[in-house]
Length: 279
Figure 1 (cartoon, helix red, strand yellow):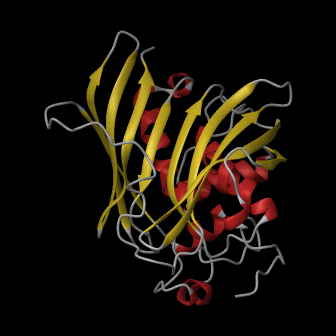
Figure 2 (tube, one colour):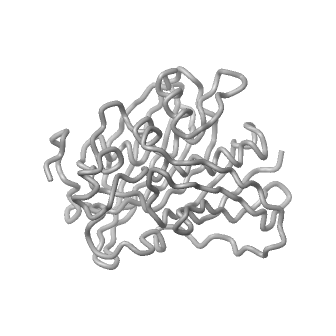
Figure 3 (cartoon, helix red, strand yellow):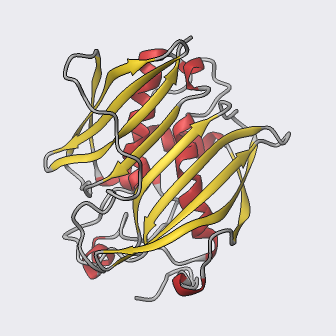
């Protein structure tokens, strides 16, 4: 399939751990933030000076997209640590390297590590992104299993945050992508070419629900120091009803630990962990 943007395929065989993925900048414009908030059903920041921290979860995917054709790729896992709330109007610099690559059940995976800085050089976030190069390769079941550390074991006795209930729509899927984007996230015909019945939401769209739930539960300042480690296990389609929960499974003097799930009609679309500082 020809890439609409005429980019090269990911050079899987040539990639080595430590290889630079380059860098790119993006501005947190009102338009960008508005599209993200509408796509993810998040309320605008009360202070009006900040963008949602969930925007940062897409930095790894967007960095890869600068150079390579990932229009047939899917997101398998995302880890992210937040160091600062992104400010509206700021310009962020994202850089990254290849962390590892592997083949599992016939599927090729690339793991990248990214760092996001603000215009003053301050660290905003660090991420670890795992992607499947071509969805149609190999076996689809459980693609995120190796991609992230095991989630905390739920005791069934801790306080449960949520559910945060959202319905996925085609409009939200298209709003989340750049204007005019043509990929398996926006175009049914491309999705069918790689073995999907229809377009699927990009993983970081429903990763945003995890951050939204945590922020609603603990407040925006608690996002500083928050860490998530999430496996994206199932595709999400337009019309799917998604429920996000975080069960508090333990804690230390300064941190709460959670087992996180985003559940779709077909099972857990996301499973993982979240650590939130006590404030």
